Length: 186
Image 1 (cartoon, rainbow, N blue to C red):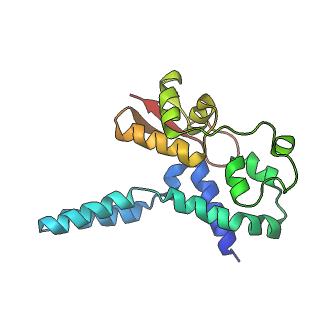
Image 2: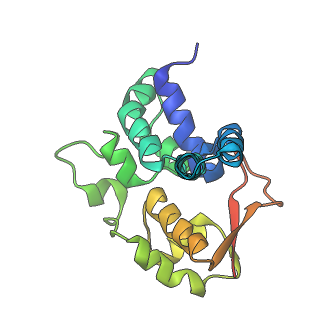
Image 3: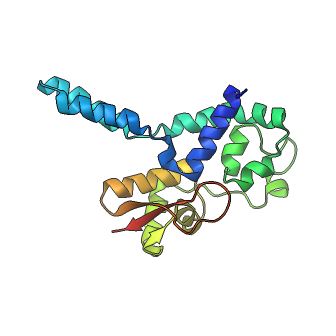
């Protein structure tokens, strides 16, 4: 039986591996159909808003669900914090989920150097230094960090500005989990 904790953890990990996994294509199609059938300007406005909302992942909600559930799930399933790191969960998110270093221990002693806060603008500024095709992990590494939400926000802004396009999953991916998503500079 799948628990609420497992669902929240799974949703977050799937989103980390493939941000498009958080988009409900059926909901988008339904919203677009309602938009095309809207007959008054106000109906079209509301339908357009529904289309925009359907195309946007609730990244903060996905992360908040993970933060609220990860500690209980890790305890239930005997999963160490290092396993979450191995699948791409940042130290910051783990700490907020209560899976960071225990109180009284130095963060540097247990997790290496303290992570530097990296903004979406800093990530956007280094994108042009990447190869034409890149992944979210490439952008994060080049910027020197950044939470998955911050990196995704920066890339989404670049897509909206017409500077980057979504290519799709890496065709040569052979490792475990979903293939990383490839983006391309325009």
